[in-house]
Image (cartoon, rainbow, N blue to C red; front, side, top):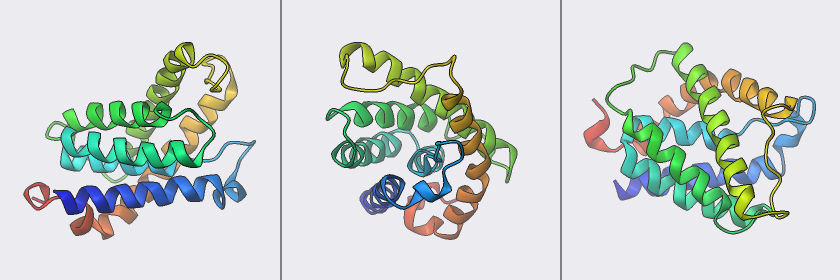
Length: 168
């Protein structure tokens, strides 16, 4: 369990770092995919809520340090999403295309909703999404399109990031 949490946290932290530096070349209309969120979904669905929360919490710290957001902003969002998706561990059949697409779309909307809630507490310190703007919908669509590819890549390293009891 500890090994999978550390490896998945390192992977999500690497994704956060790449998003803040290299991935801007993939921007469509100013929107980049949130690869760390997609990895978190995969980890949480496969390992459950405890490991999803811990990986989300630890990678959220990295995201907060890298970004200009207040410490705790990404921690809260990723911990909640890790918990919610981990609860559905045994209840979701993950096919190759449809499930990752839908899960990434909904996780992006959940991330936006949580950022709006947190913006109330961090007034003028964070930029919250707007459900009436196009950015959230473009990001949700972009994450959804990228999710099947990321899930496919994560399947290749599955023994490293999925705990032994969850590999069946």
